[in-house]
Image: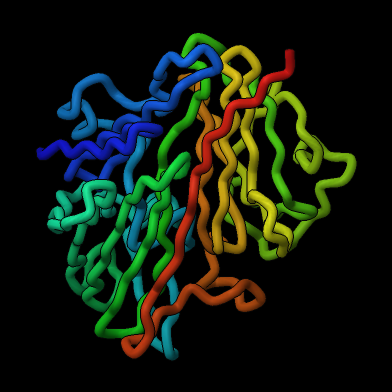
Length: 301
């Protein structure tokens, strides 16, 4: 397992070749002290047995997907547990070694991975590339993929954030620019219905404390140039804005450690819900998406 570091003087990030993992991200708090805002694992080897996909790239299909799926009239039996595939299962990209790509840019790191035909039951050999770039106060992630046969592609990063590791995630302020979220079945797979966040615990249109709200939900982002989500922790003074060209974000607060995930991605279970924007990638097309995490200091004194 290889380790790589990017440092532009404002941000410092550490990555692993296993899972193309974002292992650490160091940001200065309001006192000028660098703190690691990623809730990862202390030793790189520990990720080999991690069941939470900490910091990893998820593919070829992020989120939950019901078995089977149909492409061009042909049915494909995909890997599943009780009828549902989560984050591409046992051979997901978060559990694979990625190949680093050399660059003359000291603030850029690119990983490549080739997923064979039939992995997890999916058609098509997929070639994927994920690039991490530090620019000023931003960490940018660019995703790119091609396939030699029609296949569903939905990529994200599963980094867990805490802007003050000494505090509970409940003390953070959260804002999400979303008027709607997806209705879920008991197995957490979307039904296809969009629900209004008004007068629900999922209304984060104005900043509020996360408090005791347990989140594992897909928010349909409003079509604006605003940040998809803004996270703020008063004690550290750090504010993190998430920007993306994806249509939505799964916001997840795990039950066993103090952190929050912003899984920018297309809708879950899209192959089985015709009304959702398609995730089908054709051989003549290129999958291209990006997400940016921007860090600022906010002084309320």
